[in-house]
Image 1 (tube, rainbow, N blue to C red):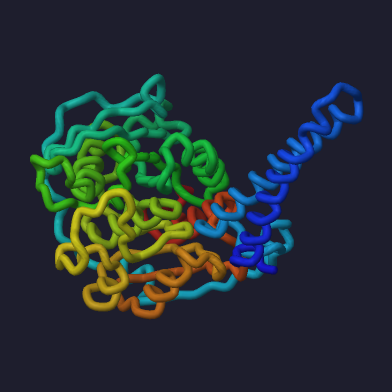
Image 2 (image 1 turned 30 degrees about the horizontal axis):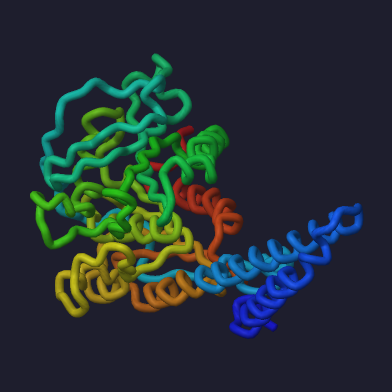
Length: 379
C-alpha cells in the first residue's frame, strides 16, 4: 500500500473515525476513578490523537509529496545521482554579449557596514517598479577588514520557497556560513548574499512576476526584484557590477524566481542555482492574468529556452520522484538551446523537502565557483 496512494489515506480515515466512535462508547466506562481507568483514558486520547495526526500528515504529504514512498520516509532511499546537461556550454553563456544594465537612480546612502546593518532588513523603494518591500543583506567574512576596503564582491540573490521567509531560508541553509567556509577553502570567492522578500503584500505568492496593473498598482514584482533591488545593492554595498558576478539561488517556488529572474534578465544575472524548482509559472493565491492571456506566456521558461534562449547558465538539482520539479526540469533540459547552458544533478529518489535540498547547496556553490567568472576563488 503506497504512502501517497488513496487506499492508505482512506484506511487512516476509517481507523480515525472508528477510534473516535470507540472513544465515545468507551468513555463512560473509563470515567470512574482508579489507576487502570486513568491509563485507559490516556491510551484512548493518545490513540485518537496519533490517528488524527497521521491522517492529516498523510493528506498533506499526498498534496506536497515531501516523502514519495515508505523507503523515502524511513531514510532507505538510494543515494544514486546522475548528471545531465542541456543547451550549450557554460563558457559560451558567460562570454555572450548582452544589453547594458538599465540606469536606475536610487536614494544615496553610505556603504553598508557589517554591524549592525548586515543581516538586518532594509526597505527598498523601487524607482522603476513602484514596489516597496524589504531585503536582507548578508556580508561575507572580511568585508569590514581595512585591507579589503577597496575590494568588491560577487552577489547571490536568494529566494525562499512559498510559503516561506528569507529568515527561514538563511537559517535552514546557513547561507553565509556555507559560503564563508567554501571561500576559506578556496572553492569559491566570498560573496554578498541578498534575500529579497517577494511574497508581498500580505503573503501574496507573486511568483516574482509583473502584474497587469503597472507601477501605480504596485504589482511589478519582477521589475522590483530584477532591476530595483540590484540597483539599490550596487548603490549601498561594495559589489562587482559585472553580470558574471551576479547569480541567483532558490528552493521550490524560490527556485522558480531564481531561474525566471536570471533567464529574463541576462543583463543583470549570469547564473542561477535551482533546487527543486519549476520552469513554468504556477499561480496560487494571486492570478494576475486569465487563462490564455498572452502576457503570461512571458513566464514559460521552457518555451523561452527553446525559442529564444538567453546567454545564462543554470545549475539544477532535482529528484526524479519529485512530481512538481522533475517534469518541468526534464522538459527544459530536453528543449534548451545554446547559448543557454543547463547543468543538472538528478537524484534517483526523494521527495519535495528541505532535508534533501540542504546538501545540494554546497554542490551548487561548488559549481558556481568553478564555472562563473565572478565567483572563481581568489588565489
